[in-house]
Length: 573
Ligand code: FBP
Image (tube, rainbow, N blue to C red):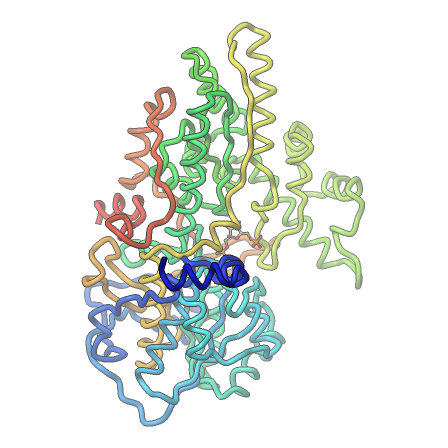
C-alpha cells in the first residue's frame, strides 16, 4: 500500500475533498500547459515590415468615416526587438460571445508585455465594451494568468455586446482610457467588436491610445481571404459539437429508432455545420449559403430532409442524424425578407416611441398589427408570414441584439423544421409513399461549445495572437487586426501579421439603416471544402458512414489536429 492510499484510508475526508475540489484533474493538467512562441517572437516583441505585393481596397464610406486609419497598409512582424525606455499601460476587452482560447490571448499579451518590460501593466475591462464606457476594470496579474490559461469561456473578465455607437459612449471610452493613462487597447472580438475597434482607433488618435483588434468567434465567419483563414475559438467549438453529434451517430446506429435533429450555433454563416459534417458524416447537412444559391424555400428545405428520411425508411433505416446551422433562416430568401422588414419596422417604431415605450412592450397581437399596417409590408409578406408555424412567427418578432442583429440563437429552428418534416411525412404516409417510423429528438449545441477547453490549436493560436497584438502595439500600430497567416502549416512556419481594419468594412443594413461594419465571410461554394462535401454527402445520406471524432485530445498524435475545413481550403491557396 502506498503512503497516499494509507493517508486516504486514515482520513476519508481527504478523499472526499480531493474528489470534490473545484479544480478537476484535467483543468489542473491544462493549467500547466505553456503554448510555444512563434519563432518570430523568440528574440522579443518583433520588428515591423510592409507586406509587399498585397494591397486591400478601402470603400469610399470607410475612407470618409475612418480617414486616419484608412491609410494603414498590411504589415508583417519579423524577428527583432523594439526597445522602450518607459513602461506601457495596455487595456484589454473581451467582446461578444465567448470563444475558447480567449484567456490565452490575454496570457499572450501579458507575457509578451512582461518580457518586454517588467513594469508593463495590463488592465482588463469587465463585462465587455461596457467596462470601457463605464470604467470598470481590474489589473491582470500573473496569478490570474496561471489560473485561467488554457481554459474555455471568457470568465476571467466577462464579456458583453455593447456597441460604441454614439458620441457620448465614445467620449466616455476616451475619458476612461486617458484616465487610466493607457497607451494601447486590445479588443478581442468578432465582426461587430472589430468594427468597434476601428472606430475606437480613429477616435483615440488624439489621446495617443493605439487600438488593435483580435479575430475571435466560434462562428468562423471573420476571415480575410489569403490572410486570415479562421478566427480563434472555431476549432474548439466545432470539436465540442462534433463530439456530441458523433455520440448521437453511435447511439442512433445502436437502437435504430431515432432521427436526431441537431441545430449548431454559428449565427449567420454555416462554417460550423461544414466542419462538424466532415468530423461526423451525418445523413443530412444543410448549408445556408447553398440554400440561398439554389433559392430554396422553407418548404423545399423540409422536402430535402424528408426525401432522405423516406429513402432511408425504404432501406429499413428509420434513424439518422441531421445538421442544421442556426443561421439557416437568413439564407431562405422569403424568410430573410421578413427578418429585414421586421427589423426595420421595430427600429423605426422604437426610434419614434416615447420614453419607456418600445415595440416589444406591445402585446403580440399589436406587434403583428403594426407590422401588417406598415408601408413596406406587402400582401405577399403577410401570406408568407401567416403560412409559417406559430413558433417561427414568434421567433421573427424577437428583439434584435444591440448591434441590430437578428438573434438566431433564440429560435428553435431545429424543432420547427422537425415539426414541419413530421407533418409532411404524415401526408406522404397518407399517399402510401412513406411507410417508416419517424421517432425523433432535437438538440441544440451552442453555448456549451463556447465554454469548452480550447483545443491545442486554439491554445497556441490564441496565445500567439496575443503576442502579435503586443508586437503591433510595440511598433506603434493602431487600427489593425492582429492575425496569423499560414495556419495550415506547422506552428514553426506561422506568420504574424497586421491587417488594416478599414478595408474589411462594408455597408450593411442594421436597425433599418446602412452602417459601416466589418463584413462576415460566408462559406465559399467554390472552395475545396464545400466541393468536397458536395461530392461525399450523397453516400452519407443513404448508407451509414458515421465518423466518431471522440472528445478533444490534448496529448498524443490527435492533439495536433486542425479544422478539416481549414486544411481543405488551404489547397486553394
Ligand atoms: P460572436 O460573433 O460575438 O463571437 O458570437 C457568436 C455567437 O456565439 C453566435 O454563434 C450565436 O448566434 C450568438 O453568439 C449568441 O449570442 P448571445 O450570446 O447573445 O445569445
